[in-house]
Length: 377
Image (cartoon, rainbow, N blue to C red):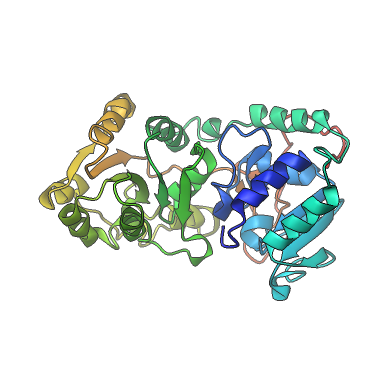
């Protein structure tokens, strides 16, 4: 998007006919349901998306810096068995963490134009590989995102994101804060054509979503946006509810309240012996519904799974008015799958346990899903 090359990218993908995986910052380049859209990759990527990279023999990287969130810490396994062509305008980003990638230093718009000229009038210049697309579809079916937390108490956050997507067809886009909810949103939101997904990415800026939603509302006046935030991040800029109310901005704020700093708590569970200092112990949150109403913003709280549908109906009862919906999430809910630290990106928690900080490879568990049928481009 920063290269203003989204439309050219979509046209090229259609011409090439090759499957596409995406990082957190490219969520909205292809809509849900696009036949070549595979899914999210990286530390908290869709399990089938990470497995797709693990099984491919050619990976073309467009503008991603391939940091640890995309590749996992085991860069050797990320590279092994495949050719990686890295296209980027910044030389310092190529063969930085990884080495041996084929470098192509270029801005994306001229790169796409040159590639289209090279392809000429041929619609599909390569041999079609329907068996590869079928293999990816089988992986998606074997590892549904809504089953990663199948045993969680209360509302399943991945199911919540699916339901939110289904009810938010009128939304111009989503503004997502930083934390576990950000990962659940990236894993399970089903974006429609034209809907945007905006998050702070590598900046990791808690409190981003509400002021960013205000900015989006002023940039695209009259169109409703969905803000997805956690209870911790929302408190950093909660006073901006006054700006929302005063300007009657059509923000639909969905606040996932797990009564803790969830992402840090999950790390404390994995690496610090469940010492939940300042995440669970020493942390508290106010009555968000009462605060929103005090500012003059409509608000409601979901009371258990049975109340989710009614809560989402209330959220969208008036698409022109701001509304805050608080959704309770179990404190113990983790963002899964997650690349097991020290392991290849194809080996993910909770099936594989992470290595302890400073130690070697993690212990492995048997891999599930369809058996590998050979590598495909």
